[in-house]
Length: 104
Image 1 (cartoon, rainbow, N blue to C red):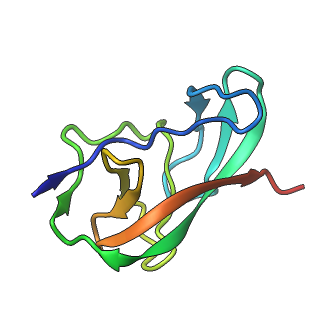
Image 2: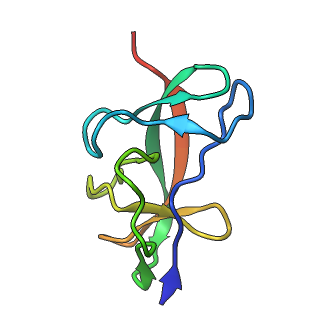
C-alpha cells in the first residue's frame, strides 16, 4: 500500500503554495493563488504506467482544497506521491499536474 497526500500546488507567477478553490470537485478546477490572486486551472498529463497500490490520504482533503481530474478516467481521486508525481487512486494512472491560465 502506497500512501498519498493532498495536492500541493505552486503558483507559477509568485511561487506561492496557498490556493483557494471555491468550487466543488469535478466542476471547473479554477484555483486562485492567495499571494498574487492569479487564477489557474489544474489539468493532468499521463506519465505512463499504473500504480494500483496507492490509496487516498486519510483524512481525505476538504472540498475547498486543490483538486484535479485524471486525464485517463476523469476521476477527481488524484493525489500527490512523496516524489511529487501524482496518482489517480481510482484507475492507478501516474500523472503530472499542470497549471494553465484561467480561460477568458
